Length: 169
Image (tube, rainbow, N blue to C red; front, top):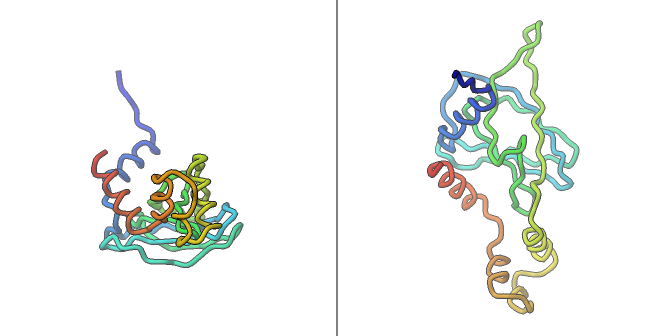
């Protein structure tokens, strides 16, 4: 029996194998990131060393057109530092460029959305927004929640976690 693998399954496998940094590529990709979140979304390109480079913020409902390359990963963060999804993934790897008949590039629409947060995650986000960090220890809540509140979103830590997850899978 022959098992055929879909193109999206092949792309997912290739993305898992690719390191979480940009690789030199001559394969362009043209994307229009659309922010479908209710908050500002900051675009981060991971450079050749894997360090995040900001490409600015996108307001809700707005677009960011980008000429990039297939082997250049992108991540997005909300204004509070929390992770956003790009086409339902934490890390976006651009697909191959497509061109119109006249030779001009087609910009692929890529949506930036908020993930579905657990009730605990959502409450932590809200408390961080409403309570000063210096007042967290005064809250009458369990210690593990105070510890989580002090552990605010951190882009570099998130990138290290994503790398570790990719290495173990």
